[in-house]
Image (cartoon, rainbow, N blue to C red):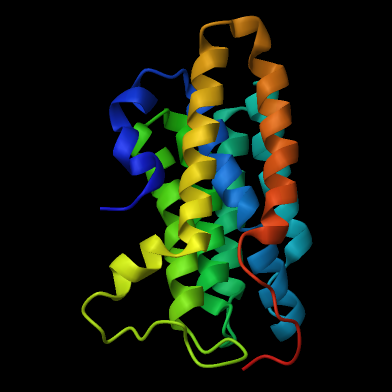
Length: 210
């Protein structure tokens, strides 16, 4: 079982759709720098399109107004990003997890399913797992073939930091759900903070793709 939101399904169930989607979008936002690194290193993909889709989701969480057709276009746009991920790179898997998190955020906003929000959150840990078990600039910190690798990854400071962030975000949106007049402000703060936290989600090494 993953750390983070997956351990708190019942609490997420009680949230309104907007706040479930905010949790999912925050996870996608924190992975944005990984996707951007992949695009810079490989010139495959489209960082502007990724950012525009995520911003559209955030905007709709803050002020719901998108139609079902618009959300379907966002889904098509994110699927296109997956198809554009054509080059191999050490950040390739992380880029895919970021796009999947984007898709799950849109799904959460459209259908309000707790599981989709959890799936978005899980991509963060998949990305961290990939980072720690891949030779990014050096030998992997943990070897994928070892039986206890996943336990070691979840105990690593990067995973513990993300686990903390997800639990903190959940507590904050829970509190705002009790005061609906605060929801827009809380979502806005979560959006800004997760963009800042993307800078420290995992270390980014620029340079030629490998």
